[in-house]
Image (cartoon, rainbow, N blue to C red; front, side, top):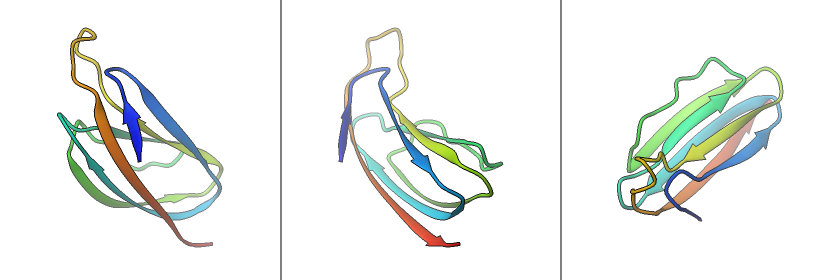
Length: 85
């Protein structure tokens, strides 16, 4: 569980493999960006369940997008499970 102020992000370095992401967020939600693989990111969302495959080392970035620094903080719960490889 991570608390992110408006505009803050947290990233996780991931080795090659298949990953399942389950995310829940408070307030306005959080967005997700996969760095490396060809997996779609998201806009702000309160819940997300998705799978992404990394063929090389990459990152998962969870953000609390900013709105001129006026947005609310969010608490994001990130469950990341490596499915194989």
